[in-house]
Image 1 (cartoon, rainbow, N blue to C red):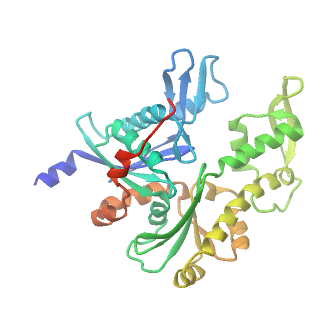
Image 2: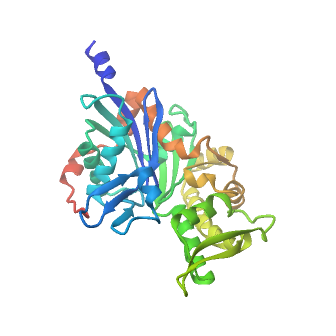
Image 3: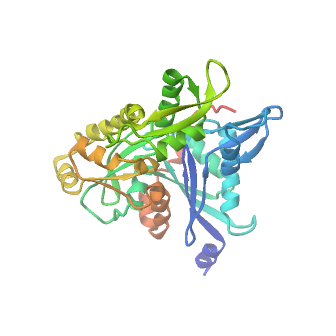
Length: 355
């Protein structure tokens, strides 16, 4: 009876605290929060004046005393105090009831997270009012969210191409048998586009413009019509005046392809390190793409040609991690087995945070 009562007054949250976006799903309700991982700071008072989407709407058009920042870098905490406040704000928005509601949460983390970085995430969650925190590798969560079953003894390979990290996880029987991760992702494409326009076209553009180009104009696979054009508006570097230039898909293709090739090479290198039985499973099954980067135009055929294996994109790839996390609430034994919650090293890790 007590166990059933506890479940009635507990929000079971799955939290994917990403470099670009934060997603929260609640058991029984699905995804309840999907907002940019941004905060707006008043530089005079150091107070946070906006979070998430509200902060994103200010980006590039801030008032003179306002700065919009991303407190997470490469999938880990870069600014502890502001990450803590941002997470607390998001958790409060996602809660079903008043302040007496207890919260248990499963949070994703990159596979190569350090002890200090993991402790920072754990402490931020506790300070946000979460009673019990489970930490799970995002590659494993992405696999479950993409439809891989914890009971499947054959191996599956999942590539989580996020904004700040790229993770390859090979999963079998509900466990990670091999993984690798690097701290780069689709944000490198927006940065590359901005750099190209500044250096070669003399135009300074903001994040909103580069994101638009990344999601609606450029392709990771050589486009059929490389002469297709679009007008890009911004600030002329030499005169400082508002200006516009015409850019083509062919002009921006090398910028995008260079970043995606780096991700594809990481996948290729990782797959050469597998045991024979695991490699045979991946040869039969191919690779699953997840994360926001999986939505890039042309990435599926590009990856397939580069690694010479079948490639599929997960349903709702942006939500793969958070959907996988929330599924773990249905299997407590699996959650206890895969969670990385070694409190001894979390408590003993020497930690310094940027405030």
